Image (tube, rainbow, N blue to C red):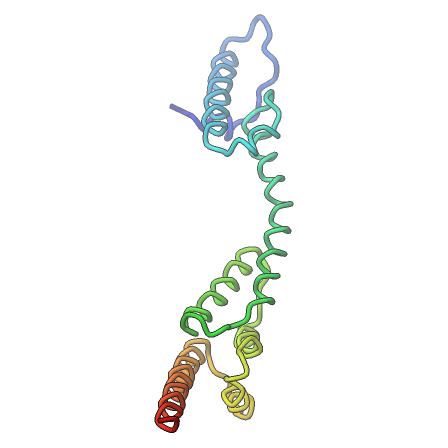
Length: 179
């Protein structure tokens, strides 16, 4: 159907009364341009559609959309980065899920061309942990080797389980003592 013909070929020079072979190419490109624009307009949200001129070709339409998203990329980067640096583990849910959420944010930032040094994620996570994890933080900082993310997750999960057990045992001890 040559729907992408208008994307692949530049607009030909205006036709003259003696043009024959160019007429076929011109008609083919115009048809492809019209169908391509119709498909794109049906495929995008109304908020974007309304801000793009009606009398353009497929290439200009795609460039306009690209330009709209380039400026939004900056906003998205700021929003994601802001969320990342303001995250704190509050003890709700598992620590593994929390770390995976932070890791996913780092991946989203990488897709936006904002890469983070691998060891920085571990340090950001350590900073965001509550006071109950202070002995764990001290233990990590006194070791010479750095943990890879998977090893760090395993250690955090183990520490979380230890803290839950200690909290449970101290609650049991308090209940036994008050009786």
